[in-house]
Image 1: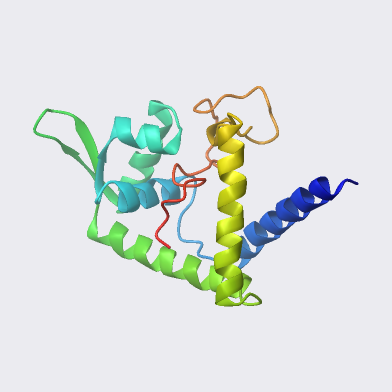
Image 2: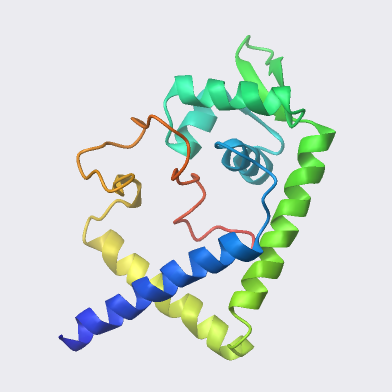
Length: 178
């Protein structure tokens, strides 16, 4: 195996282990896409976004966004409102805000646990190195949003039939909270 191939294999293996550890140690407060929806509202919408903006950030169809938002509303995480221009908006409720803050704190604790074996300097180096890999891939014309869902390379973003396995619109961007 070539050295570059081995490095990328190790990177992929580490990413997969990290995902599994985050799932094992992280929060379990949402089901069927509601976590992604609430996270996007909290991180990108100052607590409220139009259906169109949610669709854009999540990479889901309008029907899927509405269906998940209705489930989140039934659970008390969000409410629907109409903007001054008459557009339907989804906004976090007090309960939704409290739950997402707890969820993000749990994610932070799980991430700290996963990276406990690294020094602060090593963490900073890892961020920098991963950033360089991301930049190189983007320069090659690779679009993160084209990742195949559930192993189907023909499936296009926004054409999903279930919500498990979705990627949140905030993944893959380097504008995370940290």
